[in-house]
Image (cartoon, rainbow, N blue to C red; front, side, top):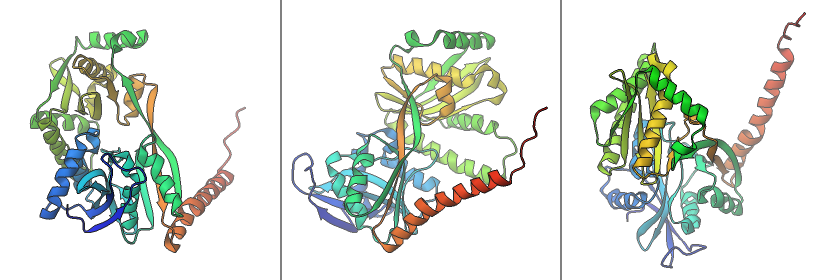
Length: 374
């Protein structure tokens, strides 16, 4: 394995098979032949994790957000990668490699490799702040990295930033609330019946139709927005192609009156239906197309043996499906034990909140009082 930046760390809890693990930190460069072996090991590791944490998703995200310096940090045991986390570097800040379309951040691999992974991060020269947003609060990244960082005199802040809704689809038809069921049947009657169309192979036309449905809800788009949509289309096309080859792709549409009125793109892992994108025709908004789509895809996923439906942060769909279960996600901010790191910490965690509170107080004091009711 080629590792331009590497150090050796004895794991606090040896990984499976015992022995020492190496802390790995290197630039991600698909054009580099030396990175090829590392990527193959990363891909094998990713097959055992959630689809959104697959290395292909990380690389496509880097292209989508035009990330100039993506990095891979992790741990290797006897020359084989056993833990991996994708990062990005902007100046003196390390960030999770993510986007609004790929909001999940986590390590894939062996929990016991946490000390080596932290050592890999510390090995990278010249960073003052590490920002990881969208980390599941129950992951070892959220639970162990703050402890390791504080032990080296780093300032660490952890706060919840989102609660991602999900629901159990086993026996969902018997568990659905009666009123919600009546609403769905009423909407179906008003449309003259609906049908689910599921596509599990790469279909460029279906993907184009899904993106058209999404774009139709945004009128008066600027040239910049249109250019961004072309880039986003290429991103989803590549995602669909990768996961179709693995048998983990679903593109689904609800059809009514001979038309596709709502659609979604989801990734599957044998247990969970991960809803990545959802869109609908605004002309049919009064018929609740998103609710109908979620209901039909949930029933279909249950018939195919899946157990969970993960809404991946789509709050509107949480309301549609009456989901009251959610997985907490946090933001972790770590400041290096240096003068620059301390200064960044003071500016972000002390000065900025004080200034924000002062601004709100001043605004409240200077705003005109509301007219009194007679």
